[in-house]
Length: 454
Image (cartoon, rainbow, N blue to C red; front, side, top):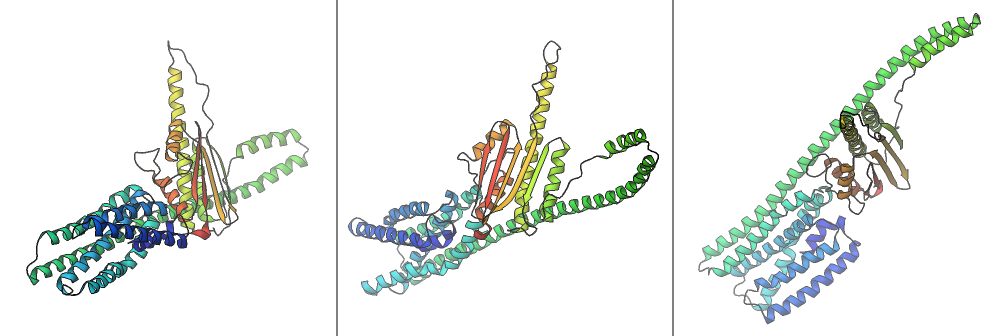
């Protein structure tokens, strides 16, 4: 049982694998010895309840050895416990049908072989399928619901075992039905897990495809903007040649007054902001340009600095969608701050006695973001204006300054999808998400280690 649990969670261990295995073996040996003494001294002929202390210690040990939310711990624990329970049922079937007349020593050998080696048949299920879910799916609420599946199988396996001893089987046919029930239970467990994790893979793949489509849409938008910029640049170059001829004519005639008037008329009117390249990587530049334009549309001051190579140090889709989530949250926080300022200004202008009472002034709106490489890590920082409600929600999501994968949303009830996605990405790349928030500003810092991806 411990072996199966470790196979599922070996990517989320608190200690090294070697140290964890040593601790686990010590726990198993100590608890087995204690329970063996207890069974011999106090338990009835079945000794069913003697396993309760073993299960309790196993669950507490799993909690102590792993860095997992309780939903995942319960899912892994009940899955391994069910595998062990089915192995015990398999031994009981063999005992009733094959080994009933064997001597005590032979039956103990059969017990050890079936109950210890039997669960190893499920090693691929735990080491691949369940481990994939533990590493890739980080929705705590989802895992709390999923934990009911193995818990149900565990209860069913124990109920079947208790029923077998409560009802005396008097024929070979009843033993066959018992064996068939055990086989069906084992089959349903494996089939349920395969279908469950296949559905999870499909959901995550669909989410990935949606993110890719969004990224492609941003890239297309950026491409069209660049095409328009090139056309405007060609037109400006054409106009510039004509303007140079006019300027030369003023110079040839020594008409300084006319030249100054011409420059004042055409220079100031032509000055306008053209968004430059924010990043060498085209996809990242597309994301930055899209949200920079949105932020500037309502007057926010935007500063974006992405000191990253054209070929990003981690998968382009992962990093760009993380930046899109962070920048979208920042822009929407500024929009809410703008709406709040407008509401306060409207209330102040209404005043009392028909008099106007302007507020002290709207807060400065800004979105500052940077990304750079330091050593073998990528550091991302996004700071933006926000409302006091947003600041409180962000602080509540990270009471110790580190964001969990179940961050609450400031925009809607329930989990924050964007922040959850970023926190999940940080876990995948063995990093973390740190947040700071005061009354009017919020800062999110993300650390990613591309070389340590899970």
